[in-house]
Image (cartoon, rainbow, N blue to C red):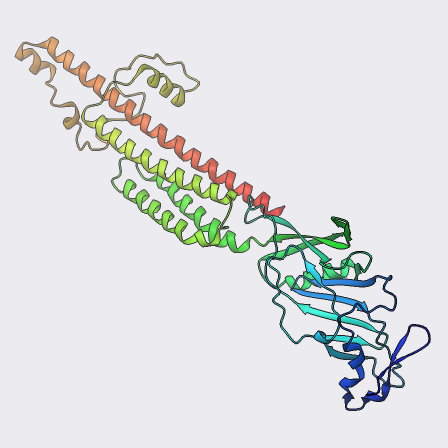
Length: 426
């Protein structure tokens, strides 16, 4: 059988054009080249093969190299400058992505483009699940830096050198255009380095690409942050309900149950590992809602106790209450008679329908004189005034606690909104 691979001058090889016609290329034309696919295509084994790498983040790996066994004159071969050949019939460089965790999932039966000058272009679509140390603390406003390292597994620098098939800015622009309409990530930049890797006595050439990507947070802001903020805002508005209202505690319990259902539903959107800042935010929101409910229960109990049998207020608590309500006014630490300074009357206290129910029936001065006990009447009036003053103090204390927790709600919401805006803009 006559070989269609003829030797030219020196160490050059030329494909016989008798296998080219208007209907295609005879496979036997490249048979001599196919028989050599087990060997690295060089005319001198001391010369390394230059393999150029390019890729797109849409999972396409492109490698190009020169095969000196393949060349033909396009003018003599019906003007054919490039033909397609099954990749399995050619020598292929074993370029690996070191961070890849999956078995090579490239489909079988891929083809390679062979030019008349012997340059081979091989595009291999692969899906790479790579190792990338993710820092998810600022999720969903996080930015990640991943690496893709390309190198040969068998060939050292004496046999294979790696280079770039395209400029880095071209790879970056192409990848950015592809990723722009796909997925939740945004490509920021791609940088490269060409460190050599020494394993024992063997030195391998490699190219490392540093890929900076940023998550698009809009989906998570709409599905996570906004519902949580709405529930917190409604809970904060519940402070405008009267503390003595019977509907306030059930309303807060309903909101708390709704927030727990929301946390269960949004659990699939959060990262499976690590503790992002948004999880801390949700925990703080839940804690505030629980504290708000406990404070409502405590105030309801306190108001009930104050309208039935008010306990004496400790001296330190009375002093603190006076400082909170009248910070610029020096008031005596002892209890005051009456409740004129507080602007409250027993008729306005929760659970009290009429003043008579709280203070009892106090006999008038003439009735007391007729009964012959004027001193007893004054003592009863002083006791009732003291009791009214205690009731007013406990009611005012409950309102101060309500106001402080409401201000804490507003401060938390303002801080969280400011943090979200800053992280989103950066």
